[in-house]
Length: 198
Image (cartoon, rainbow, N blue to C red):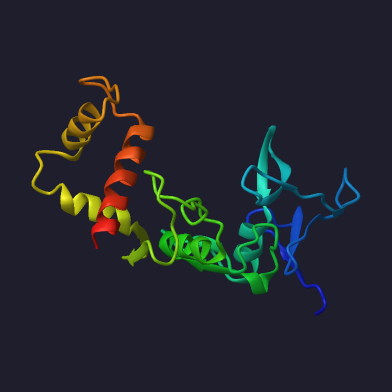
């Protein structure tokens, strides 16, 4: 492990310093003896410590402080990326400025993006190798695409599902939203029928 380097926190020079290992310390001064400060995670896991700005308490984030001190001010329109996907790893070697789009792609690659964790499409088909098509960086359900293509001549997919539900004695409100369970049943019936015909 390399020797820890400390630089003043930008905008709080003479009060706080930040290290390239992601730690923050208070500088000894008139009413404080100084020392390394405890970092706490916020709701998303980013580490911060609370400091006073006049009489107001504000959060001093470790990743932002490291980048500002060791790399320079954050350009407009970019964010600080954690290259390994761990928001608690604030070592300089793990941080980089990037666009929000690059940051989102990082979270998809690390499997931490909310959409990347989904195992099934909204209708209930599983995202597996045979049923998933990648397009413009997003997953698309092949079973749903097959159903949509069968319905392209119908006035609307909901109208077709309502007709199917009526024909099969499944109660649905004539003008209300279609329950997800009814849409799943319709998708399964049409998907299995198509596979059987193939």
